[in-house]
Each structure stands twice: as C-alpha cells, then as structure tokens.
Image: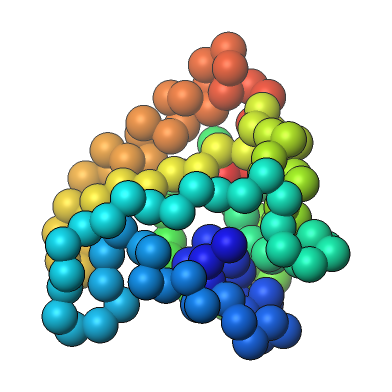
Amino acid sequence: MTGLLRCLKCLATDPKPLENASKLPYSLSAASPEPEEPAAMPAQPEGNGTCSCTFFMLSADFVLQFPGKSLPFFQEIRDDYTTDEPLVEVALDYADVVKGTHIETTLAVSHRWMQQDDPDPDGEQLKAIKGFLNSSPGKKIERV
C-alpha cells in the first residue's frame, strides 16, 4: 500500500510507506514522467491492519440548523463553538472503509472553491448539502 493511501498517523509509525512511490500514476518529484497504471489497492493493509485515521466531521443537525449563508471555516468552528460542539471526531480504519461501515451515515463533500478567498460566497454549496440532508436518503446521514 502506498503512502498516499495511508493516513498521517500510519506514516509516522511505519517508515516504509513510500517504497512503492514509483508505481504511482504521477510523480512526487518536479519532473513528471509519463503516467503509469496505478498500483491496485490490496484487499488488506500490510502489517496488523489496526491503523486508523481520525477525521473531524460536522454533525448533520448542525449543518441543517446553521442559519448562515455559508458554513464557517473549520478553524472558526473549532474555536467559536465550545458549548454546542458541532464537531464529531470519528476514527476510521481500513476494515471500516472496505466494508462500507459508515456509508449510510456519513456524507463526504468535496467541491471547488467558487472564489479564491471564499469557497461558497452565494451559499449554493450549503444549500445543496441541506437539500440532500432533507431528502429521503439524506435523513440517515449523521455527520458531514
């Protein structure tokens, strides 16, 4: 398993994660060789398989009830919301990912920033997320 498929915690405890870096479809150096076929992800992680990654997610209720036009940055949420803790700390391990353990309760969001200094100036991204969370499949989502 290459280092780019492992979390930083795993990188800190295992000194050999980048040994297959030459098999990546892109280069980690300034000179970019022709893309190669990516290495297949193994059925099980190397070693004992207990490596997990910790993520901070927002509770779906916080997102749905947020009154603003767009969500604050992570740092603002972390620093400003101390009583109503909207951040949920979740540790995922390799088995969770392969089994799809959290697939019905976790919503992963990735979107381009609409402006260089503001990811959602018109609130369209938040509106779309809220729309999904209010839909039938979105009702199962606990964290975003």
